[in-house]
Structures are given as structure tokens and as C-alpha cells.
Amino acid sequence: MERQKPNLLLRVKNLDQTVKFYSDVVGWYSDWKDVNKRIARLNLSNGEPIAIITEKKDLDCSPYLEKIFSEPLPKGKFYIVTKDIENLYLRLKKINQLKVELIIEEGFGQTLFITDPDGYILSLWEELFLPDNEILELYRNGIQMLEDSIRGLNEKDYDLVRAKGKWSIRQTIFHLIDSDITTLHKIKFALAESGRDYIRNPYDPNLWE
Image 1 (cartoon, rainbow, N blue to C red):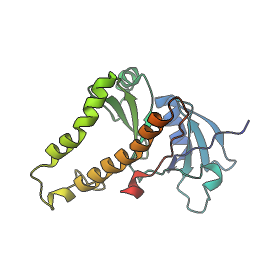
Image 2 (image 1 turned 60 degrees about the vertical axis):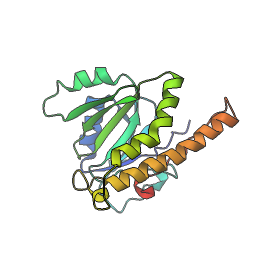
Image 3 (image 1 turned 180 degrees about the horizontal axis):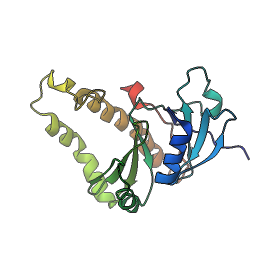
Image 4 (image 1 turned 180 degrees about the vertical axis):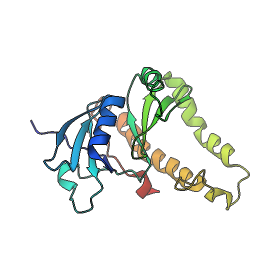
């Protein structure tokens, strides 16, 4: 049976160290490395794989990856949808010198942020399910919530960032618009063809921004 190709790539300094981190800390496992240990494949808790490669520019990664794949910026965030985040958080809090943070957005979801040895921020996201009527109400109010949050800002304010390398307010707004446009297609498919399988076509938010 042919292995599923990853659509996420991480460039790391020490392949074995990174594989050990994700295996010991997060519970993922590696089922394949190339003979020179320059690239490895990790299997996630949801069954999807990611690729890890050492920082060598001469290796062509394309044979190991899906045609469309994402590659986080150095020390950037990447998101994985999962379950049972709270129990994982309680376990990881006991590990000395491990940087973890749990953010709960009531009625929407919770995200566990874990910083790996290369500075990437693994962002495990779990949905907190709401009744349909509350979801629709949040969606209806989304535009007003965004407008309220940026009221009073001037052109210079829109380019403020929380830290070097982070998105500005302007970039974040554009990302919200991009995400809404891509989500609209899923809604249209659901309305027009109820019960069909929908294959998500991923995009790189950094390129779209």
C-alpha cells in the first residue's frame, strides 16, 4: 500500500532530535527515514503525516510531498486539528523547560501551543462544538466584531506588529478575509450537494497574505 504523502514540511537542524521530541512529547511516531537520515516522516495522532528535513538546500523535497504543501516560516506556527487537548496539556505542564500554553476560546475552540527544539510553534487545535443556531449567530456578527475591534485605528496603526516577524494588524485582517472566502466555497458545496465528500484544497496563508 502506497504511503500517504505529507502536505507539511519542517526544516530542522537535527533530524533525530526533532523526531525524538515529537515522539516522546507529543506522541507522534516516525515510520520512515531516508538512508542518509536527511528526511523523515512523522505520523500524527489524526493519521496524517508531516515531513521533517535537515536544513540542507541541495535536497529536492518534491518527491516526498504532495504537490501542494505548506512550509512554515522559521520559528513560525503550524496548526494541527486534534482531540483531547486538555489531558495532553496537563501532562506536558509537568515537563521541565518545555514551553506550552493553552488558550481557550469559549464556544469556539481551544489551542495548545508547544515550542519545539527548532523554535517552531506546534499549534494543536480542538473544536468546542456549539449548537447550530449559536454558530450562525457568531457568523452573522463576525463583520461587526471585526469593525468594532479596529475602530479608531489610523493607517500607521494597521502596520503595527506584536513582535518582529509577526503579522501586522493589516495582514491579519487580510488573512481573515482570505479565510472567509475559502470557507464560503465549503458552505456552497454543503448547501448544493448535501452528503457529498469534500476534499479540502489547502493554501499557504503567508503567500496569500
